[in-house]
Length: 424
Image (cartoon, rainbow, N blue to C red):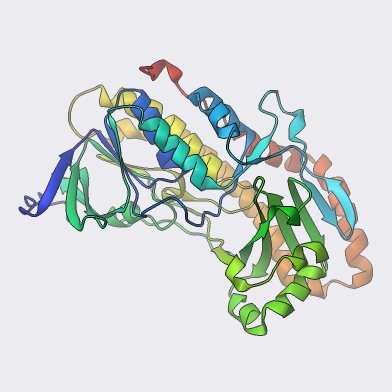
């Protein structure tokens, strides 16, 4: 929709008014909705899917996120969900194990990360937000466009597919928390700023008994394998591949792929039965040109697409939500008009430098992985094993690697939930 004054909705469109519309019920959108609702703000959370039982690719919640859950007052409920805890993930390089990260060195009690599937967590956050009368959750409701008046965003149009109904939500702020393929970002005409990558990550689901450790990585001449538990029922594994090669992998068949995995870990390979277990993650990190406009704010992958390196996607979105919460509650107190971009820039000024630092560290790691995936075959076998072992024995002791894992665990800058804004 253009910046010209919006036309009046036709008689078939149902119009609702609220203070904030949050688009996307992922970790960032659900956390922000809960924080705003608990702070007395009228908020509507829109989710285009009919339910939350879909494939999510982010499974790690780092120690900083555990701390934020505690400040939100939901940590005990989160820990009651099916999960695994990780403190010392290992990397096995040519059959020799190395302790690359030790989260137990962090200040207690937030000296561990959580590994879990997202649907139960998102349902928990929505249920907690639903305890407040000023919160509304609308599933099966896909946003189709932004509504603008006088150059300001004043709401969204949407379709309720369950009831075959056209909707318009008028608000003082629209929050785009709808992921890497954000409809809100596209409607705002913003470039996602994607970076090129030469690798992709092939995820595959496993039963919990397939792994005997919370998290581990394995590196051998034939590839790089990640795997970790997700609680009592499921586990997840990831295999890095060169970009664009997945169709050929499928063409050669599951037996050939299983044999390839077996050269790195034969136990994991036994549980891989079909490509139906697999999903491909295109590694395309990015940084959207700007995150705010009059009446509009982007967060999480809608603002900055994370790489899987270091498992940062969930944590960055939840950190965004904590900072946005404070910014928005104060801005909403000013008057009854759409929140101007100048008031929202506080959020971007705090979060953008932190995101840039994390993305820089991720891209360094990604380049190293990419080189190995694409060129390991060119290294003489007599050199590869001793070189790799020495590198992984020395690397954890270097300042750069120590800084990277602490940044991934605790964030580049301290982030806290402003609990003084809570009404209850």
